[in-house]
Amino acid sequence: MNISVMGTGYVGLVTGTCLAEAGNNVRCIDLDPKKVEMINSGKSPIYEPGLEEMLKKNLGSRIKATLDADSAIMDSEITFICVGTPSSEDGSTDLKYIKSAAEKIGEVLAQKEGKHVVVVKSTVPPGTSEKIAEILRAKGAKDFGVAMNPEFLREGKAVNDFMKPDRVVLGAKESWVHEKLKELYSFTDASKLETTLRTAEMIKYASNSLLATKISFANEIGNVCKELGIDVYDVMKGVGMDARISPQFLNSGIGFGGSCFPKDVNSLIHTAKENNADPKLLEAVMAVNESQPLKLVELAKKKLGVFSGKKVAVLGLAFKPDTDDMREAPSLKIVPALVKEGALVKAYDPEAMENAKALLGDGFAYASSAKEAVEDAEIVFILTEWKEFSDESLYSERQVFDGRKLLRKKSGKNYEGVCW
Ligand code: NAD
Image (cartoon, rainbow, N blue to C red; front, top):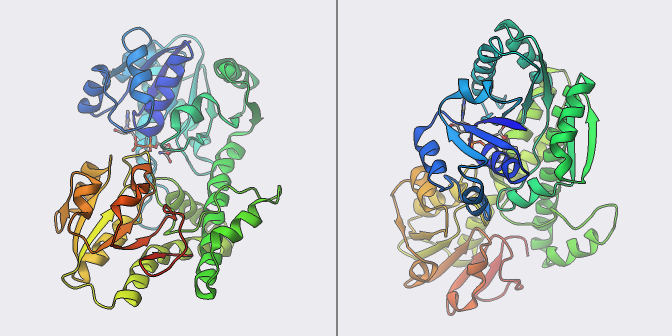
């Protein structure tokens, strides 16, 4: 099929590249000429394992990036909307990119003959896809259907998650739209859940909120375990062996970050309140997560006293390993807190250095390797569980504060875990 994809971020570029790999002709549209140029030269603007190789393999024959939205939409039968849906100040979802993408699609479809499916893949509050259909109609589009197809990929594992999803959720009003998308997704034998637009929109928020709830729950239990001298990882091993619970997302630590969980839980809280519901549980999930990163700094202060003038290596800045994504990363709270305490920080991340510098500034030093970061340090903070940081030789004779249970150790003289 001929496909156009609006937005070449984490979701759009993975969607476009994987659909090309599945045999479709894909045009990836972005407003950013730098991203378009990079993609067309076979370079991925984001770090995602396996993505660049797959992009290179399909480039030119089945995938191309473009700034020309009009031609890309006109020449396709399906358009995916994969633009960002960031948080507004009040926690609601800022839909300005969605609105302008919908207006552009509507203008083109008004001139186009034949059926067209517009697929919303961005995470949007219930009711948004119906509003997108209204915008398309207002611009003069006639022969179209709108679908909501939430994306569940995990950064760091995005290519595999897209090609081999647990399920494909297809929200639409018209059965021909469901049929068209089932055909597109025939490359995977994952279950296809056919549902309404609003249900599909809500499934994404409910899924992310439940995963975030599991993490905050594990952190709350972890905080109690820490006080009692119990290793919460041993506890959660026993808890996760219950098939009703599963061991996934029960890792205690310095909290969740990233572009999705904080934004999506806040958006659902906002939607709940707007509709006279009282989201007590979701508010507690966010409150636990707010305070969790700084627990590691408090712990270090309790153990060492003052930080002033102490050399501290920070290993890991991205919100999780195998990504360069810094959005809402716990490091954004922990590093400034260490600097404020007077620590002489030297930080390192294998992939997120550029994004980190943009967000954290240059009020402290950056290293070009883990080895260089720890070289003169007396204290090491582990904030992201990159595999290369599990090399024990990095820590010899140093006081370690682990926010991720990377070293699989019990707390003791030179090692302290945030919840164990
Ligand atoms: P992103 O910010 O990485 O990328 C968005 C891209 O859209 C940018 O490159 C931007 O230039 C482009 N864009 C904006 N307006 C455009 C327009 N009118 N035409 C063409 N391009 C335009 O965002 P992301 O992380 O890929 O997330 C996209 C959506 O997917 C969000 O709603 C997010 O919540 C959802 N989502 C993200 C993830 C994830 O892991 N990142 C997972 C599932 C769902």
